[in-house]
Image (cartoon, rainbow, N blue to C red; front, top):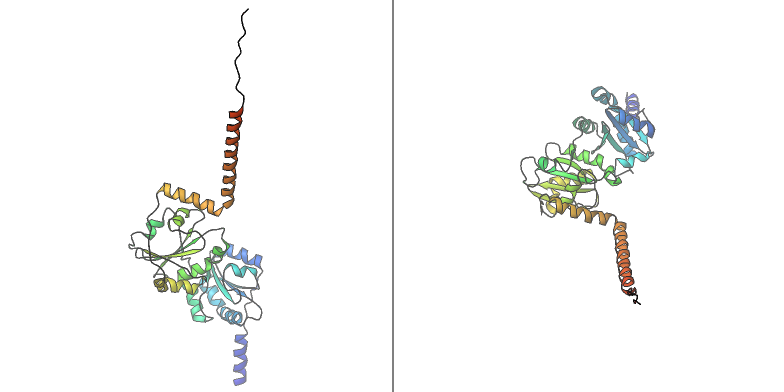
Length: 299
């Protein structure tokens, strides 16, 4: 009996995910399917094997309860798009194509609990039109605390943090609001209002004050700790009121010149050329001989 029991245990731990797919198949899957649970794995990774075992053991539960696909990708370059730590295993839960990086151990109960809890995207999208109305940042009123990531769609680092931000939003659900503002498009005015010059940038709005996240490393746990307690170690700043259209316009010009120094150089060259031409025309005009009128004598 002991021999049979040892065989059953070893075969259970040897259980693997059957569905191994290519990168192209994976991209099509997350675009068309509602729920996709994905294991990004690497050969010889012990943690990868632990997560694969847990997912394989619970695959039927995920399929029956959510209709979810449970797949794995091995040594995929796509892993770096969803996880800051691509050296170990990553479990990413896609909901309508929006990724959430699983934050927790390779534990059956916790893994299933997180997936059940995070079936819908939790991070909100804010812009210049609705930011103040929804956050009430200036008044610190009734909508609660807000952790906001300022990003740009052209910023690769910002794109890689989307799954992390969703994990924070799910983890702190009912405790804190988590949102994203696209500083490169419909959130540009809001970004300038709070002095955001580089992306990604994280700011916590709490009780009429703002606290900027200043750690170099951005992880799910770091953002959770910052939002719930560690913000007390950051500088408390008064929340600026919205800028007037003129002030925002001048700041936008300064920002464009800073981001595109070649424009400033071209402008300086153009001004120099205009000045030189003006001086040349002036001196040329001043040195030109004056025409002397001559009159014919009457005879």
